[in-house]
Length: 207
Ligand code: GRF
Image: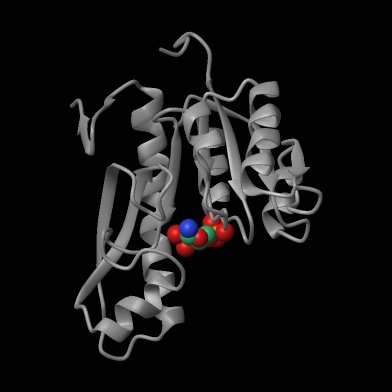
């Protein structure tokens, strides 16, 4: 159980634009999330998310694949960085890597990911295009705890959006992202407030 007298310490992992990172920063700065982002870590030195972090005086760490022979070694070094910052909750905000047991076991039920589809439909890459190709009438986003599979962990929150007949990957992605920016900070808030319990696959949220 975390020390509730202090803001929850977040470590946010990114690979790209970082709009979900920005949504969480904005909620913290608005006083709506009792959290502190201790570090933003990217496997991609070009990620715009790093620029966003620096603009808010958040330590921005580049942790690239090169130099690591296997994924478990990369993850062991990642665990060291996160623990060095005292991170309590790891937030995957567009982090384009599958985690190994090394990371998952270091932060049990304390790693969250956001996926741009209604899991278990359309896991993996290009979820929005997968939804369009399948012809579903509704899609959305899913916040879930991370296990060693691809988008398979226990589901915390989901939000639904309609799929329009003339949608492109871009228009559907934009509609889903608006929900991501609302849903992800909400899931982080539930964690911070100690309102999430996990029993196997099942997540219960206390009112
Ligand atoms: C989001 O669509 C999220 O669902 C997926 O990666 C994307 C990240 O976007 N996991 P951003 O970098 O937060 O803008």
